[in-house]
Amino acid sequence: MTATMLARPILLGHRGARSTRSVPENSIFSFDLALEHGCDGFEFDLRLAGCGGPVVHHGPRVNGVLLTRATCQELRHLPRIDDVLRHYSPRVFLDIELKVKGLESAVISALREHTPLNYVVSSFLPDVIMELKARSAVVPVGIICEKPSQLMRWRKLPVEYVIVHRGLLTKKLIHLIHEAGRKVFVWTVNDETSMRRMAGWGVDGIISDNTRLLGQLFSAKSAVP
Image (tube, rainbow, N blue to C red; front, side, top):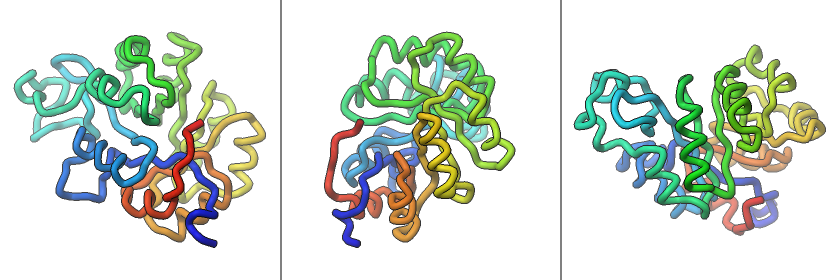
């Protein structure tokens, strides 16, 4: 099977082009590089900051300082949710991961202001999913599943996307999720064999650190649904 014959899922960079060590993950530079590599968009993380609202960052600390206690000066290099939405909406697919509770209202407000066309707001936390839907029924949300105990909850949550770790995903599970009218994204898929397998199984999206390989493998661009 050639690359152009593969089914074409949505291609997303994990925190941008994470495998490119010369640029920091979760940065505008990394997001741009993922798009240059041929991705349709990217996943990025949001956390609460003590200054200026949600910031794009994976861990709870920056340079050893808790984000919730950091000053504006200490956070000046981190993008904000508005920066990302303003720069990329509506031309790319955005997977906006909420790492903690308390971001829901600010994220929904930002989405209403910038109105991206193709996106999902995702989280590991069922409480965050429920709060998002309580505040806005139209915001597409996704539950992220890394463990079997998390995966068991997807049927009971008001989600449009189930975002499954590659080690948990099976053809049968994809079929069940699709039968329920929901979409399946898989993370983090970094080798060609796994990328081909997941596409062949019919996933709706692949999230990868290795955006260069992902873009090369699925080089025939198609419109994001």
